[in-house]
Image (tube, rainbow, N blue to C red):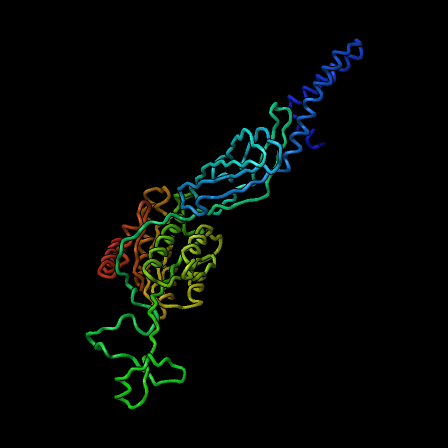
Length: 432
């Protein structure tokens, strides 16, 4: 009750002040009718406080997010369901859900009245232009009586999290340089070369299924032979994200690092749909394998949280990738590189890996003088050529470029030779 009395509004306190003034006047003047008015004025805010204080502990609230994971720039719907667990109806309820600044201002919803054991739902929309995991809640409810004499605040402890994932763009279907690199005994058996009845066989072992007996080979060798189980071919790919702070420019959702994260997510989703066994490595030490079922969720949730690293260099990134050399296809999304850093990336070409690098010229995300721009372009061209010499297929990225238009440059064919020639001409022009 004490807490309810502390929740009296200005109107309620005015009623008490008026009651005190009327009571003193009644005693001084000897007016019984004025004393009755004083009692009435005092009773109203006290009854309102008792009414609100009784109902505040009998409310239940649940929150749901639709969807719980949303891309950058998309909206999510937050649904609040409030239920009155008591036998008494509530007064006017003011709902306020606490949100981080990135999701906008705090929504405020007025719920007029909830009857006994009655439930009601309200909804509002949030939108985030920056990826991340955002807490939603706790919910704050202001309870008031019908006359507005008392107001109490209740905070529900539950907090839900909205995951804002990077923007994923669809990529055109192209044949990548390393699509036939991987592990397994066979990717496809050629009937034209081996014949329809030609099968890999081995000697029968105790416990083998008799349905796997290959009778043609058994007749030819004189021993019981069974068909060998072939290990299915697995195309492997490692996607590498450069998280060095000094390698990226710009701020907010238009920064070069956000372009790199979105490209990483898009490439990872594209490769998973193409059947690749995927691995994601970042310069911040993240190293995950995409599981068969929840792989997409793991990758997108990881990229929703990835941040730029204050310290770090390319050698650390190379070391992280080489801790477990899977071979196959390696696709790197790099920020600005120096010639020395590009040469270090040659260490990722071990175990027969085919390497494709998206070299971001992050200086194009900033405004520079003509002289500084020329110097930055020369440094980027030299680093890109060093990346090609290190055995990578290099794809240049500048501000305003879109990944779907750049993706065909990662395909097999003459595009790599064209880029190699272009870089050679650029560097030779710089040297002259």
